[in-house]
Amino acid sequence: MSNVYTSNALRFLTLLLIQGLILQNIALGQVNMYIYPLFILLLPIEMPHALIVILGFFYGLLIDMFYDMDGLHAAATTLIAFARPAVCAIIEPRGGYEIGQTLTKHSLGIRWFINYSAILMLIHLFIVITLEELEFSLMWILRLTAGFSLSMALIILYQFIFNPK
Image 1 (tube, helix red, strand yellow):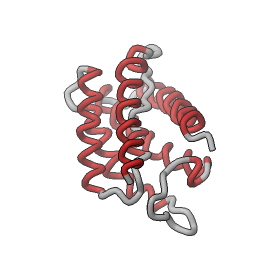
Image 2 (spheres, one colour):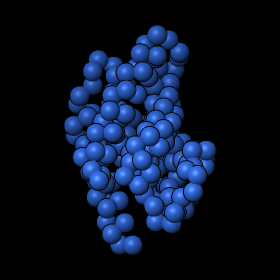
Image 3 (cartoon, rainbow, N blue to C red):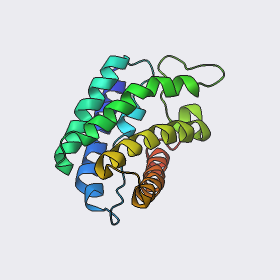
Protein backbone atom coordinates (compact mmCIF):
# COMPACT_ATOMS: atom_id res chain seq x y z
CA MET A 1 0.00 0.00 0.00
CA SER A 2 2.90 2.37 0.68
CA ASN A 3 3.97 1.80 -2.94
CA VAL A 4 0.64 3.35 -4.00
CA TYR A 5 1.27 6.41 -1.83
CA THR A 6 4.84 6.72 -3.08
CA SER A 7 3.86 6.48 -6.75
CA ASN A 8 1.04 9.02 -6.31
CA ALA A 9 3.29 11.42 -4.41
CA LEU A 10 5.89 11.13 -7.16
CA ARG A 11 3.21 11.67 -9.83
CA PHE A 12 1.90 14.69 -7.87
CA LEU A 13 5.32 16.32 -7.87
CA THR A 14 6.24 15.34 -11.43
CA LEU A 15 3.03 16.63 -13.01
CA LEU A 16 3.14 19.81 -10.91
CA LEU A 17 6.68 20.58 -12.08
CA ILE A 18 5.99 19.67 -15.72
CA GLN A 19 2.93 21.91 -15.77
CA GLY A 20 4.35 24.77 -13.72
CA LEU A 21 7.86 24.96 -15.10
CA ILE A 22 7.54 23.70 -18.68
CA LEU A 23 4.01 23.74 -20.08
CA GLN A 24 3.12 27.10 -18.55
CA ASN A 25 5.81 28.65 -20.74
CA ILE A 26 4.76 26.83 -23.93
CA ALA A 27 1.48 28.51 -24.81
CA LEU A 28 0.67 28.43 -28.51
CA GLY A 29 -0.96 31.82 -28.84
CA GLN A 30 -3.87 31.63 -26.43
CA VAL A 31 -3.93 27.83 -26.42
CA ASN A 32 -2.61 26.13 -23.30
CA MET A 33 -1.74 22.48 -22.76
CA TYR A 34 -2.65 20.88 -19.45
CA ILE A 35 -1.31 17.61 -18.11
CA TYR A 36 -1.73 18.23 -14.38
CA PRO A 37 -5.34 16.88 -14.19
CA LEU A 38 -3.83 13.46 -14.84
CA PHE A 39 -2.92 13.36 -11.14
CA ILE A 40 -6.63 13.27 -10.22
CA LEU A 41 -7.48 10.89 -13.06
CA LEU A 42 -4.90 8.30 -11.97
CA LEU A 43 -5.74 8.16 -8.26
CA PRO A 44 -6.81 4.68 -7.05
CA ILE A 45 -10.45 3.77 -7.65
CA GLU A 46 -11.07 2.89 -3.99
CA MET A 47 -9.79 6.22 -2.64
CA PRO A 48 -12.54 8.06 -0.72
CA HIS A 49 -14.43 10.57 -2.87
CA ALA A 50 -14.14 13.39 -0.32
CA LEU A 51 -10.37 12.97 -0.19
CA ILE A 52 -10.13 13.13 -3.99
CA VAL A 53 -12.16 16.36 -4.05
CA ILE A 54 -9.97 17.91 -1.33
CA LEU A 55 -6.79 16.84 -3.15
CA GLY A 56 -8.22 18.27 -6.38
CA PHE A 57 -8.89 21.62 -4.74
CA PHE A 58 -5.44 21.97 -3.18
CA TYR A 59 -3.68 20.68 -6.30
CA GLY A 60 -5.57 23.25 -8.35
CA LEU A 61 -4.49 25.99 -5.93
CA LEU A 62 -0.86 25.00 -6.44
CA ILE A 63 -1.32 25.26 -10.21
CA ASP A 64 -3.01 28.63 -9.70
CA MET A 65 0.14 29.85 -7.96
CA PHE A 66 2.21 29.03 -11.06
CA TYR A 67 -0.30 30.73 -13.36
CA ASP A 68 -0.97 33.66 -10.99
CA MET A 69 -4.70 32.95 -11.03
CA ASP A 70 -7.26 33.34 -8.28
CA GLY A 71 -8.78 29.88 -8.07
CA LEU A 72 -9.50 29.18 -11.74
CA HIS A 73 -7.60 25.90 -11.84
CA ALA A 74 -8.74 25.01 -8.33
CA ALA A 75 -12.35 25.26 -9.50
CA ALA A 76 -11.77 23.14 -12.60
CA THR A 77 -9.72 20.50 -10.79
CA THR A 78 -12.24 20.29 -7.94
CA LEU A 79 -15.04 19.78 -10.47
CA ILE A 80 -13.31 16.90 -12.25
CA ALA A 81 -12.44 15.34 -8.88
CA PHE A 82 -16.13 15.59 -7.97
CA ALA A 83 -17.30 14.22 -11.35
CA ARG A 84 -14.76 11.37 -11.46
CA PRO A 85 -16.90 8.72 -9.68
CA ALA A 86 -19.89 9.47 -11.94
CA VAL A 87 -17.74 9.17 -15.06
CA CYS A 88 -16.22 5.92 -13.74
CA ALA A 89 -19.73 4.56 -13.09
CA ILE A 90 -20.92 5.48 -16.59
CA ILE A 91 -18.00 3.83 -18.38
CA GLU A 92 -17.51 0.95 -15.93
CA PRO A 93 -16.13 -2.20 -17.59
CA ARG A 94 -18.37 -5.28 -17.80
CA GLY A 95 -16.72 -7.04 -14.87
CA GLY A 96 -16.58 -3.87 -12.79
CA TYR A 97 -13.51 -2.46 -11.12
CA GLU A 98 -11.24 -4.52 -8.91
CA ILE A 99 -9.94 -3.41 -5.52
CA GLY A 100 -6.49 -1.88 -5.98
CA GLN A 101 -6.99 -1.44 -9.72
CA THR A 102 -5.31 1.57 -11.26
CA LEU A 103 -7.13 3.66 -13.83
CA THR A 104 -4.47 3.37 -16.53
CA LYS A 105 -4.30 2.13 -20.11
CA HIS A 106 -2.39 -0.92 -18.93
CA SER A 107 -5.02 -1.90 -16.38
CA LEU A 108 -8.23 -1.15 -18.30
CA GLY A 109 -7.15 -0.80 -21.92
CA ILE A 110 -6.33 2.13 -24.15
CA ARG A 111 -9.90 2.60 -25.44
CA TRP A 112 -11.31 2.77 -21.89
CA PHE A 113 -8.53 5.13 -20.77
CA ILE A 114 -9.02 7.50 -23.71
CA ASN A 115 -12.79 7.66 -23.09
CA TYR A 116 -12.28 8.24 -19.37
CA SER A 117 -9.59 10.90 -19.69
CA ALA A 118 -11.31 12.62 -22.64
CA ILE A 119 -14.56 13.11 -20.72
CA LEU A 120 -12.84 14.56 -17.66
CA MET A 121 -10.39 16.69 -19.67
CA LEU A 122 -13.24 18.13 -21.71
CA ILE A 123 -15.02 19.10 -18.49
CA HIS A 124 -11.79 20.58 -17.13
CA LEU A 125 -11.00 22.61 -20.25
CA PHE A 126 -14.61 23.75 -20.61
CA ILE A 127 -14.46 25.28 -17.12
CA VAL A 128 -10.97 26.80 -17.50
CA ILE A 129 -11.60 28.37 -20.90
CA THR A 130 -15.13 29.53 -20.09
CA LEU A 131 -13.96 31.25 -16.91
CA GLU A 132 -11.06 32.86 -18.77
CA GLU A 133 -13.12 34.02 -21.77
CA LEU A 134 -16.44 34.65 -19.99
CA GLU A 135 -18.20 34.27 -23.35
CA PHE A 136 -18.79 31.73 -26.07
CA SER A 137 -17.09 32.79 -29.27
CA LEU A 138 -15.05 31.43 -32.12
CA MET A 139 -11.89 31.95 -30.05
CA TRP A 140 -13.49 29.94 -27.23
CA ILE A 141 -14.19 27.05 -29.63
CA LEU A 142 -10.68 27.19 -31.08
CA ARG A 143 -9.04 27.28 -27.64
CA LEU A 144 -11.20 24.39 -26.42
CA THR A 145 -10.56 22.26 -29.50
CA ALA A 146 -6.83 22.92 -29.76
CA GLY A 147 -6.25 22.75 -26.00
CA PHE A 148 -8.18 19.49 -25.75
CA SER A 149 -6.28 17.92 -28.65
CA LEU A 150 -2.86 18.94 -27.36
CA SER A 151 -3.65 18.01 -23.74
CA MET A 152 -4.98 14.58 -24.72
CA ALA A 153 -1.90 13.96 -26.87
CA LEU A 154 0.30 14.73 -23.84
CA ILE A 155 -1.79 12.56 -21.54
CA ILE A 156 -1.66 9.58 -23.90
CA LEU A 157 2.07 10.10 -24.41
CA TYR A 158 2.50 10.16 -20.62
CA GLN A 159 0.65 6.85 -20.38
CA PHE A 160 2.90 5.22 -22.96
CA ILE A 161 6.07 6.56 -21.35
CA PHE A 162 5.26 5.89 -17.67
CA ASN A 163 2.91 2.86 -18.05
CA PRO A 164 4.42 1.10 -21.08
CA LYS A 165 3.22 -2.45 -20.31
